[in-house]
Length: 399
Image (cartoon, rainbow, N blue to C red; front, side, top):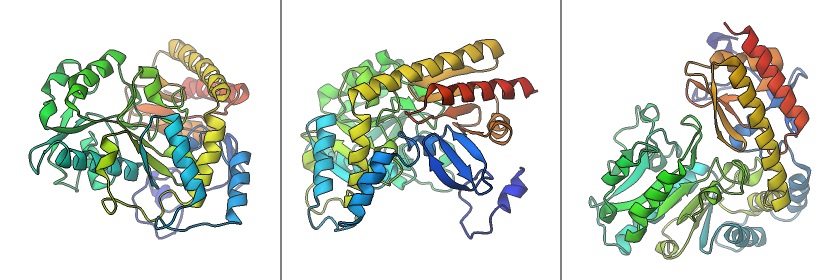
């Protein structure tokens, strides 16, 4: 289906901010979805790394159904028991500190940036115009003005400038470039440990160690953006665990609620103290339904036995992809766990379209040249084999 067909696929009066695939999904279960014509697809997009337990996971559904009969919304002027339990659970699964709830990854990142800036102002004496954030090329942190300002992909900036000028972008995984950081005037460093939108690039462990050594002794907080990498997506519960350190500030969303909008920022002391009553807020953040979905999701994903089995299957899947890459010779495999990229070094739209239209398999892109493969963490060997077979067939038919 060409671009003209896509424009006329639906007459719904949406603003044209999405390049939607010509597919109307009406039902999902596990690793599969069905369109409005009854066609079944293997969904290896997971709602862009959201559906880590697949579509409509039974345990999350049961918890939400029970909560629906109690209370939906109370605002943050009152306490709500699911929100309290979720905050306690997140701290137990990360590090001692404080939690702020929002509804999306961009909001969680925005909260992290505001917290770091406020801490620098009150605790470190960095006044307006005296400091900067450090971020990295190819990064993606969200579409609010603050999150966009630390996103290292100029294509997303077009038409929105001037953004924040107090951001220093450095090349990702470049050891020498870290010397350009001036810790005394750095509000915070924000980093993805696997860049998802930017092409599925994992951080080099030596580079991460050097980055931490460069800033932490000066009291500069390190914000780890785990919006896409967290909740088991890259293997461990959080990507930072594989790198042997603990963030100062963590952002989480996407997979946290199994498709229900929920996001969290976790900050350790002393940075958490920078937020005081009235300094930030969210109308819906941490409401009873969202918190219930996240609690039920974490009940499954945070189980060490689940994570171990998930990693075993992810390793098996990667070996299958690497075998095809060796046979085909036109792409290489990058990533960690269930966040994988197939880099063809040229536009991959045809690969994505053929998988969808000819093989009933859904995948995404990460930039123009990378096919992004995001299976749910529950994907079994049958689903993996289906994908590998479909990929082989598509590659044989490609010019």
